[in-house]
Structures are given as structure tokens and as C-alpha cells.
Amino acid sequence: MRTDSVFNHLMYELDYLERKLKYQNNKLSDDEIEIFNEIIDRFSSIKSSLDITKGNVSISFEHGKIKHFDSITIAQYKLFRDFKIDKLNKINIFAGFNNSGKSSLLEAVYFLTKQNDIVSFLEIIKLRNKLKSLNPIWLNKVFDENEIIDIKGVFNEVNTSIYFHKFEASSIDKKDDYIASYSLKSTINDQSLDNIIHTFGYETLRRENEKVVHLCSSILKSPYFYNFDEIKATYSKNTIYKSNEGKTAIRLVVEFLKNEIDSIIEDVRLTDIEDAERFIVDSTQFSDKNLEITHYGEGLQRIFEIALSFAFARNGIVCIDEFETAIHYSLLVKFTKFIQQLADTFNVQVFLTSHSKECIDAFVSNQYNNDEISFYTMVQDDNQQIQTIYYDNKALLNELSQDLEVRGW
Image (cartoon, rainbow, N blue to C red; front, top):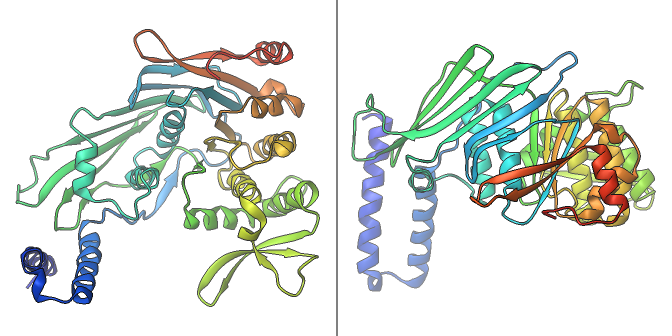
């Protein structure tokens, strides 16, 4: 018997037992019911997982002096319709009221860098909704036929786009467990790439794509996402890539932690002790027992994780949602200057959101290079469409010097 047939048979048996258990609970002890329900939950999660192996990925713009995004147009994504941002700079800061679309804007930029990588797309949906795995039935309810993602941009003077939609595939035998299909089409200049997945209730998904291509290296950092595998990947790149002075990126990060936050810090290492991977901080204070980084507070951890992003995204894009979250205001000037230095060192374009006027002021007050900063406030017009108000360096300095509230803060 084929593996998928055995799997389907087991699932039908499981559904039958689940119904029987529901109507005959009195024949099982409480402990037996609890154990059986746990087995059902585990088996069902295996059945419904949409996790996909990423496989080999190529990057279109990885080497040389990349010029990054000049403009981005979101034809459709969540609240956005025909939304365009231009005059993009090395550091791009977006402020606005809650639910004004700031986080969605960062997601749109990130998706555009990932091109036809549907794995990265699904990973963001999973992290945003704090799910361990994606259920195809749940995903089908989240996306209806009108849920389209249509984003374009000009990157390194080349036109690029992505188009995502859900559809019913005519080529798939409509078995009882077929749910829906999803298409992610991308273009880089004249090159077009497709990635299609077909989802089922009991069968594993089917995938159709020739290859996966990213526009550039990129990362999206949110205080609401925690992805340990991603943090390990960023750390690994930081141990390899070096600055022009010959220091590894991780050494630059550790020196900032030591000089600006806690002078006892000597190093931060990824260790694997008793099959548990952890980040350990070497310090002068605890030479006999070095502590995990979690002992140093959320602020230091967030600074560490954001700082690791820049070498990882070398020649690419870093998106940071709610930049100031967990970071003490007294560190903002020093840290904003440090990330601008990292952005220059590793040629990274930054998109970040903030609720904090102190955070915006810190980027100006650090006096690293104000000409590399573009600032935007996000508002809704009379038709409930999202728009931006752009401030160049001179206008932003004028607003801050007069201590005026910028519209949308």
C-alpha cells in the first residue's frame, strides 16, 4: 500500500475514533481521555502542517556596490491600495498612529526582497499569528479569492515585482481533501519566476517551481516574532563577515555591548551543551559560570539581535518594526548611531517603524549622517486610503527644533 494511502487511512480511522470518543466518554477514564486527546492533537498537527523545506536559494544582487530601493509601490496588500513611497534613503523611518499600516509596510518590503520564495512568505504568516505550524484549512479561511498581494519596486535601478493570489487549480484531481492552491509570481527585470503550492486536508502539499530566487539578502525583525533558527543564522554570518578594519561583525557587536551597555561583557558565544543551544555571555564578573544572554534583560537581547541583522543582510535590506521596543531611551542615541555605522559598513538599506518621538530625535541627535535619513508619517485620507507625508533632512530638523508634533505621531 502506498505511503500516502496508509496515511489517509490512518487519518480516517483517527476521525472515526475522535467521533466515538466524543459520544462515549464515560467508557474511558479521565486520564485515558486526556492522553487520547493529546495524541489526536499531535497527529492532527502533523496532518495539517504546511511547513516546506526551503531548499537551495539564489540571490540576484549579492556582490558589488548595490544601490538598493529607489521606490516601492504597493498596488494591493492589506489596507494598501495604489500606495507609493519614493525618495528612499539609506535609513527610512515611518511613524504613525496604531493600525496605520506601519508593520504591513515592512512586510511588503520584505516580501518584495524574497521574490518567489513562498516558504519565507508562509513563515511570516506563521510568526505573525504565533502559530507552531500552518493549517491549510485555516490558511484557506484567512485568504479569500480577493486577497491579492501586488507589490512593485525599483531596486539597484532594476524593476522588480511580486504577485500572490489563491486559486482553484484545474490541473488537480478534485478529491475530497483538496483545499486550495496558491501562486507567487515574481519578476526581476525581464526574468519571471513562479512558485505554486496545492494544499490538501490529508495529503502533503504539492509544489511546482523551477527555482527560488531572492532579490537580495534581507531580514525582518519584530519584537513580536521569535525565531531562534534565524538568530543562529544571523550569528553565523557575523562570525564570518568583516569590516574594512578587519574586525568580524560579531566583534563589532560585542564591543558595542561592552563599551555602551555593560563593561563586564567580553564575548557572546553560541554553545551547544547537553543538546541545548544557547547564547552564553563571557564576562569578567562571572568567570566561573558564564550566564545565558537571557539573564541580561530584554533590552540587551533586542539590541544584540537587531545588530546581528546587518552583516546577515549585507548588500541588502533590514526591516525593523517598533525599533525602540525594550530599549531604554538613554541608549537610543548611541544605538541609532551604531546601526547607521553598521548599515554603512555592510551596505544595508534600513526600513524601520517607531511610535517614539525620542527615537526619531535620536537619529538626528547622533549626528552620524543626517543626509542619509528619510522620514515619513503615515496617515489615512478622507477615503480611508493610507498616504505618507515625506520629510527630508531639513524639514525634519525644522520640526524637531521647534518641538512641534509631526502629524501622525
